Amino acid sequence: MAVTLHPYHHSHGNAAVSGCSGGRRASHSSSSALVTVWPRRRRHTPNHPTVMPMHTPCRCKATPHNHHAAPAPHPHHVQSKFAKRCGLATAAAATQTTETNRLEEFEGPSSTPTWAADHVALCDLPDVRVCVADDIPTQRAAALLRAHCFTVFPEGRSPTAMSARIRTRAEVEWTAIENKYKGTDIIFRGVPVTPINVDVPYVEGVVGDELDARYARIPPHDSTEPERVVVGTLDLNVGALPAEALRPKQANAPGTRAGYLSNVCVAPSARRKGVAKLLIESAASLAREKGLAPVYVHVVATNEPARVLYESMGFVFEAEETQEEARTRGKERRLLLRRDTP
Image (cartoon, rainbow, N blue to C red):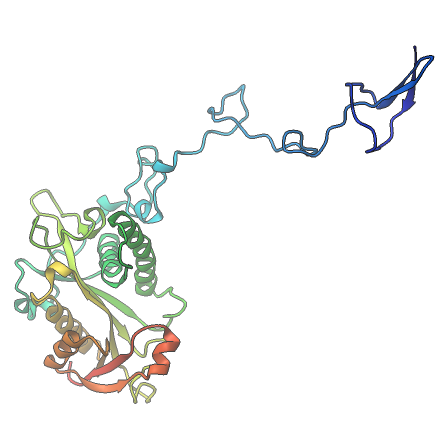
């Protein structure tokens, strides 16, 4: 039988029955028949793709004889941004200290400032302290408390999922507090903001147990002092709130320097103990020192306990939000209250 080689050309009408290669086909001739044998072609199938996949580097560590990258960290070893900013790095990153997570350099306030000292008796908790959240631990603790109080969860959410969601929101709150206090927030540019905290010594089973201990507690000055936990926080804003539709009537009047209270919240375990009164009176005293008058606050229209509290402290009705405005914001309708004499 004679075998004749022919140039190979693309064709889909003949079946591959042998593994001839070299870009040619072979014709086997005999006395009775001519048999054409086509070389085996690689078809576009999952097992034999025409385009080979990219090479996946091995998971071994880089060595002088191996150019492959080091293995990726296990998913369980990857930390959230909030944990990294708090300085709670894993063992592999524990030595990477930066200015933002060097908590050992924290000095912090040692006593309540004069503008709040007269109001400490309003709180029933022992050894209570009022301070401006002007450093990493106090801003971090305030952010976690706000995330804990302002986050709403659907029914049936697991504790693990709720804790993860709170940490995610706390990262956003921490960035907002930090930028507004420094004056670098784009929206609040030109609106000075002073975050104020109320903290107490942490005692297990008394207050603060519902907050994540790793983030909510403030480290002590020395070993003789206990850890403290932030149980209340708010922001004192100077001037009209930006992008706020519900404003007072004289917000744009010449020479008017009003104060706004925002992000007012108290830890669940510290409520009805005078923390809110201490926060508001302290903020009002600071507003008086800054020459801010009057002082305004927003409250949800259906939050009867909060409205009664503000009215008992000298706040009166100023304006209210319409249902249409509330639907536009996607939140509940609010009232605007005013206090003329801080």
